[in-house]
Length: 459
Image (cartoon, rainbow, N blue to C red; front, side, top):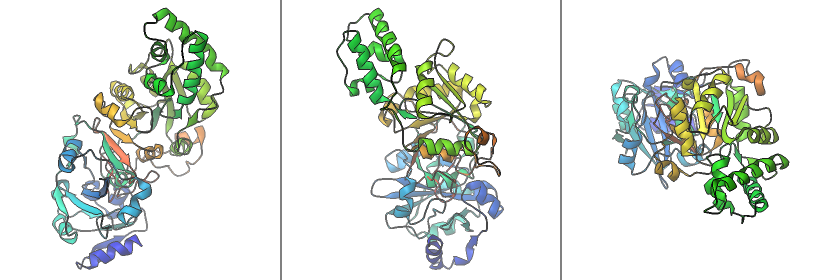
């Protein structure tokens, strides 16, 4: 349906003969380049951004990525990718086939200057196995109302940190990724509270019980929410009444630690999509770890209760591992996973997690669903490379599963290391935010641009 719709649009300009259809996938930038037989940079990715009532489709070169300052200057807001689950409804094409042809009336098409370097480029044509051979100038002609903009940067321009996490959708992300430099991310390390698990209800119960036993008044869940993120000591120092001495606060902390093993954490639940996404990451051969500021015994206990057998290495604060943002624990976790900082993604819901990733030299992903909202990141000038709004968005950063790799658990952790088009580039500090338009499973060539990857039309 999308192919016919895109073809019908091109037919109005006598360009239906330029459509290329493949027997193989062209969903990512790399796959599209292989199918077409060109360099990845010539794949024209279509990145989808949610502007409220309007959708902005930015078509850019395969090796380009959104530059936050440029995007904000042009559109008046930070880039936020369209969510994958509404891409087809709002654009007219599903993730993997997003292109500028035959789109819905609520879409505005913008052609990035990065395309002008080439005599011929190849956007998608409504499906994840198609392309259109066209010059940049002709592309502008066949998309009436389109506008040339300069909102991207090329790899050579991204060596430094340009700041500002980009909001990108799945679909855009996927397409964009195929032509951008793709770091072989083979390890994912996660913060725990507010990232993997919503532990706040149980934290509230246990904290108030510890306070009660020490003769102190209870705290509300909102108050405790504001205390979490920097370890148990920081939590209890803030939870006890103002003016309480450090020795009394430490006694309350020890009371808390003694209570924790007696709780089943019945109120604690994984965030939506955690189990499914983690299983898929393992299927794709990724190694998985956990690094938390929660005390180490508490990490082991709650992970065994809620997400048993899914992670290879798990660490919390202990004598050998200081609290984040000290990078010691993250670097140790990466070594134990058998990876390197350059090949590791660290995911967390707080500005401190971004600082930890920066200190360790990993790719930094902010989790927008946790205990800190995006304003907290902005207020502390903690710009992740990518800001995601759904756990499944992380799949776009993983390599595609190699043939024969399909098991869950450890068996599936030794698989492929080929990063798909939707995999972002290596430029740190180019924070991207993934939205609905970004498709998780198989980075489509029309995906949104992430820190060096994802475009709207092809990844």
